[in-house]
Length: 198
Picture 1 (cartoon, rainbow, N blue to C red):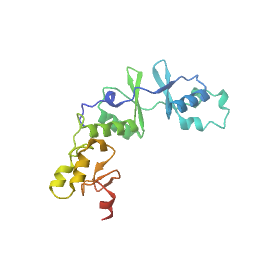
Picture 2: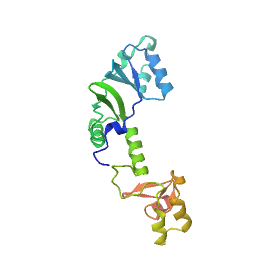
Picture 3: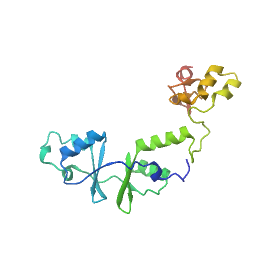
Picture 4: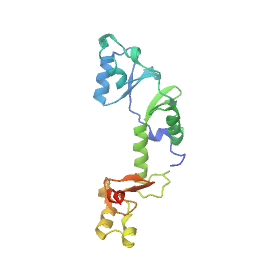
Protein backbone atom coordinates (compact mmCIF):
# COMPACT_ATOMS: atom_id res chain seq x y z
CA UNK A 1 0.00 0.00 0.00
CA UNK A 2 1.33 3.43 -0.76
CA UNK A 3 0.79 6.73 1.00
CA UNK A 4 -1.98 7.75 -1.43
CA UNK A 5 -4.50 5.68 0.56
CA UNK A 6 -6.01 7.90 3.24
CA UNK A 7 -8.03 7.39 6.40
CA UNK A 8 -11.07 8.76 4.54
CA UNK A 9 -10.78 5.86 2.07
CA UNK A 10 -10.86 3.26 4.85
CA UNK A 11 -12.89 4.71 7.72
CA UNK A 12 -16.44 3.81 8.57
CA UNK A 13 -18.79 6.76 8.28
CA UNK A 14 -21.45 4.93 10.27
CA UNK A 15 -21.01 5.01 14.02
CA UNK A 16 -23.15 5.19 17.13
CA UNK A 17 -23.22 8.72 18.52
CA UNK A 18 -24.74 9.49 21.91
CA UNK A 19 -24.86 12.45 24.29
CA UNK A 20 -23.74 12.67 27.90
CA UNK A 21 -27.33 12.97 29.12
CA UNK A 22 -28.53 9.73 27.45
CA UNK A 23 -29.56 6.94 29.82
CA UNK A 24 -27.10 4.04 30.09
CA UNK A 25 -29.93 1.55 29.49
CA UNK A 26 -30.93 3.31 26.26
CA UNK A 27 -27.35 3.30 24.98
CA UNK A 28 -27.02 -0.40 25.79
CA UNK A 29 -30.16 -1.04 23.71
CA UNK A 30 -28.76 0.96 20.78
CA UNK A 31 -25.42 -0.87 20.89
CA UNK A 32 -27.22 -4.23 20.90
CA UNK A 33 -29.53 -3.16 18.08
CA UNK A 34 -26.66 -1.94 15.91
CA UNK A 35 -24.35 -4.81 16.95
CA UNK A 36 -21.76 -2.18 17.88
CA UNK A 37 -19.15 -2.27 20.63
CA UNK A 38 -18.51 1.47 20.91
CA UNK A 39 -20.52 4.66 21.06
CA UNK A 40 -18.89 8.04 20.54
CA UNK A 41 -20.07 10.59 23.07
CA UNK A 42 -20.54 13.89 21.26
CA UNK A 43 -21.34 17.42 22.33
CA UNK A 44 -22.85 18.90 19.19
CA UNK A 45 -20.60 17.19 16.65
CA UNK A 46 -17.41 17.27 18.75
CA UNK A 47 -16.32 14.02 20.42
CA UNK A 48 -15.90 14.37 24.20
CA UNK A 49 -15.67 10.71 25.18
CA UNK A 50 -16.51 7.13 24.35
CA UNK A 51 -18.51 4.40 26.02
CA UNK A 52 -18.02 0.74 25.17
CA UNK A 53 -20.27 -2.25 25.66
CA UNK A 54 -17.77 -3.41 28.28
CA UNK A 55 -18.15 -0.12 30.16
CA UNK A 56 -21.90 -0.62 30.25
CA UNK A 57 -21.62 -4.24 31.40
CA UNK A 58 -19.54 -3.19 34.37
CA UNK A 59 -22.48 -1.08 35.62
CA UNK A 60 -25.22 -3.70 35.24
CA UNK A 61 -25.28 -4.44 38.96
CA UNK A 62 -25.24 -0.73 39.87
CA UNK A 63 -28.33 1.42 39.79
CA UNK A 64 -28.15 1.71 35.98
CA UNK A 65 -31.70 3.07 35.73
CA UNK A 66 -30.58 6.46 37.02
CA UNK A 67 -27.14 6.52 35.36
CA UNK A 68 -26.31 8.55 32.28
CA UNK A 69 -23.57 8.19 29.71
CA UNK A 70 -21.76 11.08 31.38
CA UNK A 71 -21.43 8.91 34.52
CA UNK A 72 -19.72 6.01 32.76
CA UNK A 73 -17.96 7.45 29.69
CA UNK A 74 -14.21 7.60 29.38
CA UNK A 75 -11.83 9.92 27.60
CA UNK A 76 -12.19 9.87 23.82
CA UNK A 77 -10.05 7.62 21.71
CA UNK A 78 -7.11 9.24 19.89
CA UNK A 79 -8.21 11.26 16.87
CA UNK A 80 -6.89 11.52 13.36
CA UNK A 81 -7.67 13.59 10.30
CA UNK A 82 -9.49 12.06 7.34
CA UNK A 83 -6.74 13.14 4.93
CA UNK A 84 -3.97 11.47 6.96
CA UNK A 85 -2.15 8.58 5.33
CA UNK A 86 -3.80 5.26 6.16
CA UNK A 87 -0.40 3.78 7.06
CA UNK A 88 0.32 6.70 9.42
CA UNK A 89 -3.04 6.11 11.10
CA UNK A 90 -2.22 2.42 11.59
CA UNK A 91 1.10 3.45 13.11
CA UNK A 92 -0.72 5.85 15.46
CA UNK A 93 -3.15 3.09 16.42
CA UNK A 94 -0.21 0.83 17.24
CA UNK A 95 1.80 3.38 19.23
CA UNK A 96 -1.28 4.50 21.19
CA UNK A 97 -2.20 0.88 21.97
CA UNK A 98 -5.76 1.28 20.72
CA UNK A 99 -7.97 -0.64 18.34
CA UNK A 100 -9.82 2.44 17.09
CA UNK A 101 -9.34 6.07 16.11
CA UNK A 102 -11.99 8.77 15.98
CA UNK A 103 -11.76 10.61 12.68
CA UNK A 104 -12.33 14.35 13.05
CA UNK A 105 -12.39 17.20 10.59
CA UNK A 106 -12.12 20.62 12.33
CA UNK A 107 -13.17 18.99 15.64
CA UNK A 108 -16.26 17.48 14.00
CA UNK A 109 -16.58 13.69 14.22
CA UNK A 110 -16.87 12.33 10.67
CA UNK A 111 -16.10 8.65 11.17
CA UNK A 112 -14.32 5.91 13.05
CA UNK A 113 -11.36 3.79 11.97
CA UNK A 114 -11.11 0.46 13.80
CA UNK A 115 -8.54 -2.31 13.63
CA UNK A 116 -11.26 -4.48 12.06
CA UNK A 117 -11.82 -1.82 9.36
CA UNK A 118 -8.09 -1.75 8.71
CA UNK A 119 -7.85 -5.53 8.29
CA UNK A 120 -10.97 -5.62 6.10
CA UNK A 121 -9.74 -2.74 3.95
CA UNK A 122 -6.26 -4.18 3.51
CA UNK A 123 -7.68 -7.61 2.65
CA UNK A 124 -10.09 -6.08 0.16
CA UNK A 125 -7.30 -4.13 -1.52
CA UNK A 126 -5.16 -7.25 -1.75
CA UNK A 127 -7.99 -9.40 -3.12
CA UNK A 128 -9.08 -6.84 -5.68
CA UNK A 129 -5.60 -5.78 -6.69
CA UNK A 130 -6.57 -2.23 -5.76
CA UNK A 131 -4.44 0.81 -6.34
CA UNK A 132 -1.66 1.30 -3.88
CA UNK A 133 -1.08 -2.39 -3.17
CA UNK A 134 2.53 -3.41 -3.48
CA UNK A 135 2.74 -7.17 -3.27
CA UNK A 136 4.28 -9.96 -5.27
CA UNK A 137 1.39 -12.19 -4.17
CA UNK A 138 -1.48 -12.41 -6.58
CA UNK A 139 -5.03 -11.72 -5.37
CA UNK A 140 -7.22 -14.62 -4.33
CA UNK A 141 -8.81 -16.20 -7.36
CA UNK A 142 -6.09 -14.95 -9.71
CA UNK A 143 -4.70 -17.28 -12.33
CA UNK A 144 -1.81 -18.50 -10.17
CA UNK A 145 -2.29 -22.19 -10.77
CA UNK A 146 -1.34 -22.24 -14.44
CA UNK A 147 2.34 -21.46 -13.86
CA UNK A 148 2.58 -24.10 -11.15
CA UNK A 149 0.80 -26.62 -13.39
CA UNK A 150 3.32 -25.95 -16.15
CA UNK A 151 6.06 -26.72 -13.65
CA UNK A 152 4.37 -30.03 -12.89
CA UNK A 153 3.52 -29.32 -9.28
CA UNK A 154 -0.25 -28.96 -9.69
CA UNK A 155 -2.75 -31.03 -11.62
CA UNK A 156 -4.74 -29.44 -14.47
CA UNK A 157 -7.91 -29.64 -12.35
CA UNK A 158 -6.30 -27.60 -9.57
CA UNK A 159 -4.98 -25.05 -12.05
CA UNK A 160 -8.47 -24.55 -13.53
CA UNK A 161 -10.01 -24.31 -10.04
CA UNK A 162 -7.53 -21.69 -8.87
CA UNK A 163 -8.16 -19.65 -12.02
CA UNK A 164 -11.91 -19.66 -11.32
CA UNK A 165 -12.86 -16.54 -9.35
CA UNK A 166 -15.91 -18.31 -7.88
CA UNK A 167 -13.54 -19.75 -5.29
CA UNK A 168 -12.91 -16.43 -3.55
CA UNK A 169 -12.98 -18.03 -0.09
CA UNK A 170 -10.09 -20.27 -1.09
CA UNK A 171 -6.48 -19.52 -1.86
CA UNK A 172 -3.38 -21.25 -3.18
CA UNK A 173 -0.71 -22.77 -0.97
CA UNK A 174 2.59 -20.99 -1.66
CA UNK A 175 4.53 -24.22 -1.21
CA UNK A 176 2.67 -26.88 -3.23
CA UNK A 177 0.18 -24.74 -5.18
CA UNK A 178 -2.94 -26.60 -4.02
CA UNK A 179 -6.24 -24.77 -3.64
CA UNK A 180 -7.48 -24.77 -0.03
CA UNK A 181 -9.49 -22.79 2.52
CA UNK A 182 -7.11 -23.56 5.38
CA UNK A 183 -3.88 -21.58 4.93
CA UNK A 184 -1.59 -20.58 7.78
CA UNK A 185 1.46 -18.35 7.86
CA UNK A 186 4.63 -20.39 8.33
CA UNK A 187 8.05 -18.72 7.97
CA UNK A 188 6.52 -15.92 5.88
CA UNK A 189 4.62 -18.22 3.51
CA UNK A 190 0.92 -19.07 3.44
CA UNK A 191 0.87 -22.88 3.35
CA UNK A 192 -1.72 -25.67 3.60
CA UNK A 193 -2.05 -28.31 6.33
CA UNK A 194 -0.27 -30.97 4.21
CA UNK A 195 2.82 -28.78 3.77
CA UNK A 196 2.84 -27.87 7.48
CA UNK A 197 2.91 -31.58 8.36
CA UNK A 198 5.98 -32.28 6.17
